[in-house]
Image (cartoon, rainbow, N blue to C red):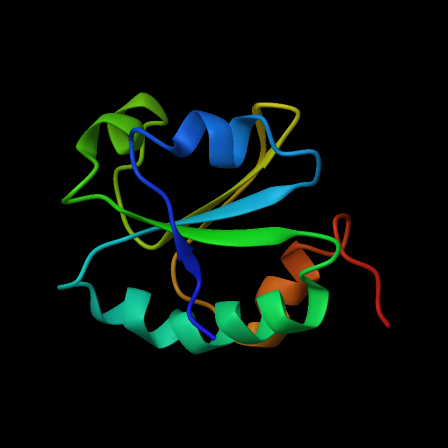
Length: 109
């Protein structure tokens, strides 16, 4: 299942106004580590989609949002809740490590 792509235009509506936490994967087509973690994020989304939404933002196509949130290296995963960044995860990690980082937003089934 592919993750929803958000843009500079849709970011406010899709992420900041969401009623549940949203993890934004700041990525780019040329980024190897970004491609490495994509299957893990898709699996987490499939497993915990009722608790946290996971979306992707291509920084090459949407530089405004990436710049606004100071994304300097990718992959950067920001969790937004109530319109604010509440957690930042930088770099590629295994699925289990990402799940541990997200433990405060997801509960085991």
